[in-house]
Each structure stands twice: as structure tokens, then as C-alpha cells.
Image (tube, rainbow, N blue to C red):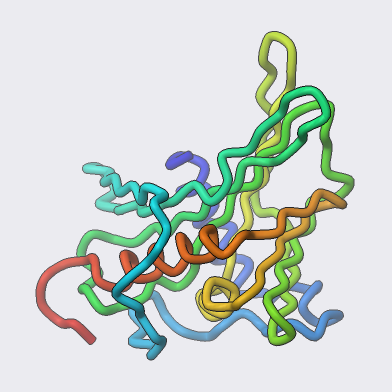
Length: 205
């Protein structure tokens, strides 16, 4: 996953520079103009019910630190078809604690016989957010009996925070819908706290 997220960094630069044509057609929020070291104020909670594990890894070559949580492990058994959803943040190790990265990444992995009709992600939270974004990376992995299709999406920071702090959340890709349970939303809030408080010692913004 780490390699795919780093490859997406180039797409993120193009995405934020050119702007998403989908956002011009949708009522959702535009990509934020904040830089990679923004001190955006946002409520960061200290207690969370979620028991989902937040993982952190560091690339010694690039100096990038990836913080991620598997929101839904996914399950494919007989009639059960549920995609795997992972949310991650990639930041440089020198980014001070208390600073936000510019964006986070969402990986959406389906498995045959389930397929997405399009590569478009739609996020909705309560009645305050409807965000649409195209995939910035697509990968198909052929296994012995099934095929896995992984799509990577770039989520602007403000859109992600609104989604994570909503009382209801849903994401949909090409007709495949995932409605998040309260515990899964709480895992995203725990991730936001981890993203915000981790980082190099020094300026806490």
C-alpha cells in the first residue's frame, strides 16, 4: 500500500493544481488551498470507542511517515460482498506535531465477482457534505480464483475531517456502497487525532 500511496503524490499535485472537473459540477466543497503545513483548527477528541488498530510506518529513504487504519476489512463469502476500505495519511517526518498534512488517501478494494461500474468516489456525511472525486490510481491483482481491484482516492483535508466528524457517513464507488457504523466513524476520528498529534518535536502550531 505504501508504494501506491507514494505514486499517488504526483497525482495529488496535479489534482490540486488543476482542480477536479467533477467538483465544478457538484455542490460539494472544493479542494482546500491549505499547504502541507497548515494549522487548520479542528476539534480533536481525546477518547474513542473504536478498537481498530492504527498503524504507523516510516520510509527511511524518503522520510515519509504513513499512518493508516483499516475502516472495513471487507468480506467475500457466498452472497456476502463487502469491499475493504483503508484510510491513510502520508506526511514527511519533519512535519511538526500539531500540523495537518494537505490530504489523506482512501483505498477501496473490491473482489470478483463484485466490480465497481465507475472509478468515481462519492462521500456523504449528514446533510453537510457531498464530495465527489475520481480515482488517482487503479490496480488489479490476479489471484488463483479471484481478482482484486484496488482504487486509490485523494481526499482534501477539509472534506475528510467533515466526513470523519459526521454522525452518519457513507461512501460509494461505482454502485458499491459502504455505510459506516458509529464505531467505524470513531476509528476515523481516532486517526485524525493520531495524524494531528504525531510529528516532529518543536512547533506545535
